[in-house]
Length: 231
Image (cartoon, rainbow, N blue to C red):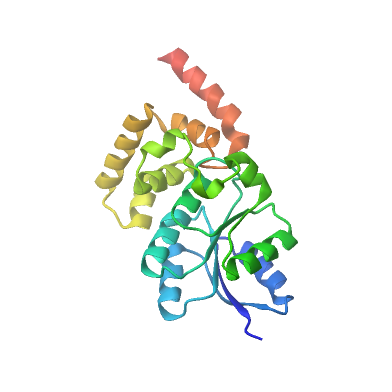
């Protein structure tokens, strides 16, 4: 029997190891590679294209959305299962729009993940019920009305990194851009979204599902109110 070959792409080693251990128990699957970034995933795929790529949506550097787009542009037959802790909003919508064949959350059960792998390998698509409910009955054709739809893919990528607390210099290093270029992107993001600060960006990111840092939302909102009072 030909085993379903799987590449795991996630910047958290513990997540990769956990999934690999679970897949190792399956008689019809095998993990052929584990990488921690989109850049490493591309290097791996150029040498060996797996049957299934399990892709974390929220990684530093290239990120899951852009990595998926590049992979499917260069390898149209590739099959990507997107994975995220975010179940609604920008991230699942963007991952499906760039061509991921499935979307599961990191809260999904083991059985659901294995089901997604087998369905995608057989040529079908799958979206975890929680995401499908959030996005409507046909998530693969979902267009959405998120304010982040105004942004380009690169602007969304930089927005995610800013809301994760990364500084402009760090973003520039990760994306191999000039810091001035990152500042220009940041200015355009603020202009398109009608905001003036990283605090406001983070509040919007939480509201529209660009990040899962919901525990910080109340603190950020309170801080924003205080800043408004000062101004």
